[in-house]
Length: 341
Image (tube, rainbow, N blue to C red):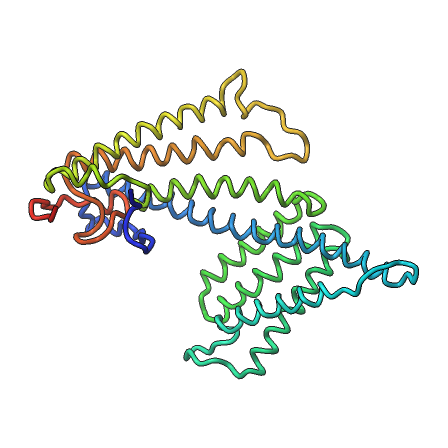
């Protein structure tokens, strides 16, 4: 059993211009390949954004709890009758965070010049301490600011704003404008977040679910899905491509069945999650369930289309000598007579 190739993740390239299209189905294939590529880029952006949001909200939630515990500890330290230990754990935690931030500085532009040389030790140390001060300020802000919406708004501006400014200074006006728009959007969404930080666990679980299913869809696009190679090697080399196409069609049929079942569970008029009333402040059930039929629909279309084309044309994924990757744009009718068994 194997994935879609070797140890490196397959790179998904755009189909390119119509004139350079060498895949099947002519103009229709080129248009479908571009649609598939655009959907993949949206999936990629959603996965990256979800992972970032999961990391931030869970980190903020844990920090907010820890700050409350430390506030209680320092209040008890002022009480001569209370039996409490000195906050040694806080010192250890700050030292660990400083070491992590120092590693970040030493491996980014904060500590490395454009030429690749390390910046002076004093500069790197000050950058690490500055980041630590920023983390401590953010931790203090979770309890000092009037509401969690204020905190997340300031956090979005503090993290994304400098990125947009960096693009602008380098003359990358389009990237700067896009990042500026993302910054404004993130700040706006922060105003809509529920009060407090305890909702982070439920949102993180929702995003984790979507990341998993969208990741499966992206794996189908890249040709990184699991497959059994033992049976494939029993067939003559000239027939392996079409055999692979048949297996893809069968896999697409199973994914289509799951799409149908997921659609019923989501939209059935009697028990569909889409029609289930949502408790105010809770995550809608349909938003959780939607990840299943949507991702399996994309898997069905991708595997089914690639399987049909592979059976008809007898080609295989990727460029000659490459791994299974890409999509319709990676399918080329090739001569397999000389392929080694």
